[in-house]
Image (cartoon, rainbow, N blue to C red):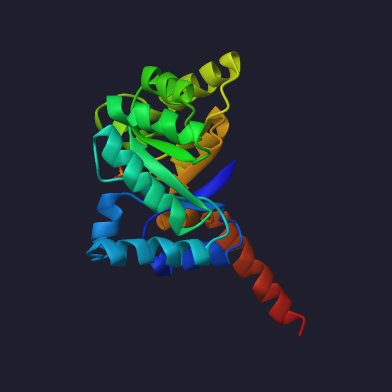
Length: 217
Ligand code: G3P
């Protein structure tokens, strides 16, 4: 399973990248706004900076909701860097645009996906990635990981090439369960990635080893 980081924060992207386990980055308008980025040029420059930091796919989301606008925006985003993936919402015009991008060799990430039916449409349109938001599904008292399992099983049964990118990850356990469910990628906040390191027996064991090592010096 590949690890993407779900943030537009450059310090966090650097910290995850320095671990050597980062395969890509996803952003969305909320994450970009959180960094205080304002205006077209600053937005484009920020994506460029991320692409220069991480050698892997970087999802940049369109702001438009109509076919022609999505296509225009997507073409401009794709021109920033070869690793840009155009992130398109799961709406009717979004599906049309994903098909257009797919026919024109531009990689896409279909976002705001909450059901297997939506994931089938995204795959039919040729999306490179589909992003089910598992944390938000859990928030509405459904089981997000179950949706991942269902999509993975449908894609395998049907031979769809779209990669399942589990998004809206809220904890290290989400990452473990998505790996079990066969997700191709997890896009996670840095805190969830670092949470995977934690185990009290590791801390206790390390303390013992360091104490014993000191006693031998
Ligand atoms: O990038 C999309 C997704 O990961 C958002 O997560 O935590 O806002 O539900 P969250």
